[in-house]
Length: 519
Image 1: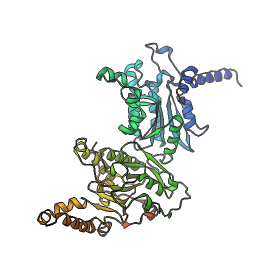
Image 2: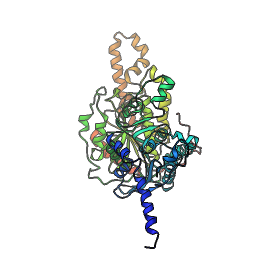
Image 3: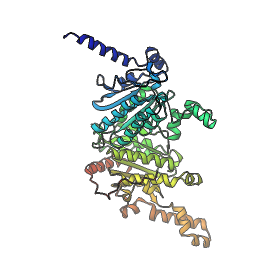
């Protein structure tokens, strides 16, 4: 070795060791004792063994005020780089709460938004592991470059490469907004919180006394706000969910999700559907059992499972192909659609369309939920989002009506005119703008008023109306549905449709800068 090299390499090794030490062994142990992995342990658990290549390891903040000169750490509180998940290249960053609370300053933010830009330029997914108290106030307005650059790059990446964020500690302020700009948020129960402004500011400005958990815990965002897509028991469970979720997504919007080999026959009949789904349209059941019965290997990754539970959305495979599922769930609120369900479904539809994932709907809903509260909460605006999403989506779209589809649910869940390629119905299906009894009361009001026995006449006319207009055979005669399918043949028919639509080409649409989604 030429003289001088040993000293140079030793100096590099010392600096790299300092970077790997984060905020010091005491802080790392404090993190572990709280039931959390450290930033580097998270990356190690996420990526294929030995695949991580770190970038920006020795970057440091340049602030000299408020004692910051003595608080320099190589890496500046975030570990960035790229590696592989199941052999697929991904860009990844993990904020390090042991270094200045994981706060975002100019250099910290620059490392992240440089990585985000690199992911877009190279068409690979991004995984962000968040554990940050927010903006680093010691850097004043200088941290705007770092933080705002992250927000801009997340926005530019939207619909180009999949972006998955895990909330694994505190995630506040600008960091919370960057998480909200991602495609999917995985949040760890009990040890993580996600909010724009924390409890201290809520107390100061509004006089509200609230804990971190009540303000932004996993239960709040998974059940009430709908911000969180997947809830995890702990850090390792979050990482397992990320790896599983990524398996349903392509590298970028220029690819399709990889088809998987399956030993589940495409022609498999599903006779158990006759037991799962009661033929009585008023009897309830859990639609997720139907999805699992149809899916390859009964595997279904439900998204936003605890939010707007009257509709279920998620990923499955049919004949090896990845599909996005949107299905009414009669087990919750009789399957009525409402504003929250429409927003949940619309967001999922747009995500699937962005990443070339075919969509399958399973329909069983009596309509949109009526009432003052829904109308005042913007039901029209929220429902319009779903109609807009379906019409814009160019991926293959297949619908199957199980028992009932009334009123606004007709365009909201799948007919040809909203852009669906194939529409099937079970023999039990009923579909019409208005249910039989209300329709008869309107159409036959004079006849009923003059009848000697109005109730008997009403029942007679309802039977006639149902037999004439509500049966799937009426819809089939008008080509509203393409085929009436026995329940046990649903899986085979869906797979056959998706196989046909595999090469779908959409005609050019009118030029526009972008649509005006009813936000």
